[in-house]
Length: 251
Ligand SMILES: [Zn+2]
Image (tube, rainbow, N blue to C red; front, top):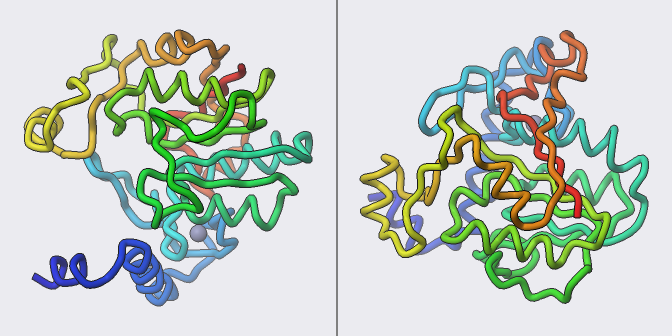
């Protein structure tokens, strides 16, 4: 009842801000020295559990709500990207607010975030038909978007089109052990998706053929277990590893 009332009367942008304000106001419960978030730069006694299908213990920062994948991406950007990429345009899909802030505060890159919901980013954009000319961006970030869009092949080919030759796409997705991606057609209804995946936002559940799908679009791609390059102490303190790594894709 309260949830529906909030949905009717408060915009999504304000609901997100309200949720974040609530989390931040309760995060002092977890102040401590065992964990550190490399995005909000705060220390905690523990991270919070998180997971839609499987609950992961100590996944989520109590203050900024960053997950393992965003903390891993922050390590990669600070150590591998920002030192070498000093100018050019960046395109970020479905932006995590903590990663947007990282670009604003720590890089000199020309940053643009986009989303199908214009309330959640700087600009509206449909990933199936991007409103940009060819060869515009040095860097594209896309975390957990491809599994929820109707046509991931079209999305990959659009990202390839707008990326400059030599440009970098950083992809993050859960890729499971089964060989072939399990998916529904792009016109599947919410009910069909709920029935097939037990949740209504997914169109597909990636298997080991994920990489070949990325390469079909033209990218040269590797799956990087970047957490393995961090020391055991760093991994324990920052918890940046959900086991899925980062797909480093070059045009
Ligand atoms: Zn945080």
